[in-house]
Length: 418
Ligand code: ADP
Ligand code: ASP
Ligand code: MG
Image (tube, rainbow, N blue to C red; front, top):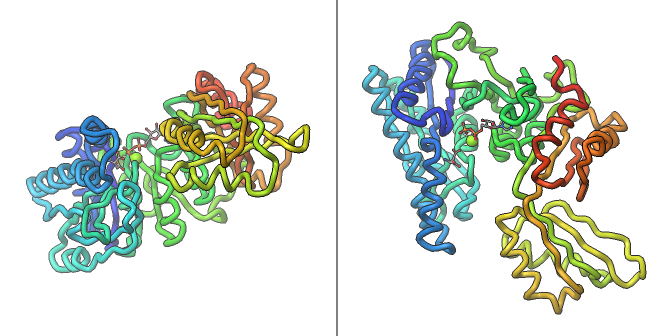
């Protein structure tokens, strides 16, 4: 008998028929004799609607009330799945974050899980074989109010619960049957990977592949949670679906578990980036701190930073990216502090995309970046900024070329060939 966590995303619980389908996946595992905790997202589109209502009520709003509103989507699906399971004869009950409790820090809207007391859930596993249906995306903050974990946060709820109950496996069920070499919606030639390392998955997720929330990958890596990404749309009773060690999907695992390591593993992209350039910034110690300090204080996530060498020796240009949604806020801060920051002018551009090439093999292979640049040049795609790390290269381009660039890079590293 094993302990399993099964997480179902928004599309998988999109309507009552789909919730019934999810219940069949759960029942299959219960019938096999396993103890099961299920984590559910809100129905697809629900969280966007709730976020929209908060913004309509007031563009600037109390993050604690935002959490009270947006956490409600998961409450509904948890209750509906428990009802459906009960109707199928499966002993189940729903849990909201605060009832368990899942304790978070106080960063409303983007809270981090700090502690989970799963003892009651485990007691009910052992005592009556009860399935716990947990509302994802939410917990309770130190101020005793509901907190949400940031968009895509149900993945993190699932992995955190898996760690808390020492689950044998955490299955992230979604609308694709695993992690692909790139987003299969953009490149139909993308291939599903049987395994991907934690490090590469972390990069893929933080560079835009939304199949897993970044924090969930971190937790899986730290707590060694055996995590699979798999499809809820395959018939729950299809052959192989109950394979305990190798269920159909992608395993996120340690690097050494992967025998055939490719140089490049995947391509990720993140749309809606904006670029800000400050012209003729004074070239003296402390200038970067004066610019980026206030942006950090305001919670603006600054990403690619390029500082040019100053020709004259006294002034330089500073260029960096921020999420397009933060552009207005960032510009307002920079303009207000123009006198202290001492720059001549500010230019900005939105509608940009960051495409990234990811692979652990880059540590030991040269020429990966040059290949990307050549491939984009051949398609006349202009590069606006570049950043690299040991296992990734990120390139900023005009958003209109997103699909073209992703497909070009996917092809040039042979990712479309088995
Ligand atoms: P859920 O609602 O189940 O949490 P998400 O929409 O958050 O699902 O994540 C699944 C989506 O992630 C897929 O539909 C796919 O379009 C997208 N995606 C982006 N990059 C990848 C990738 N490399 N592999 C698989 N899916 C990806
Ligand atoms: N419903 C939340 C969202 O859309 C959490 C999740 O689905 O993971 O962000
Ligand atoms: Mg998701």
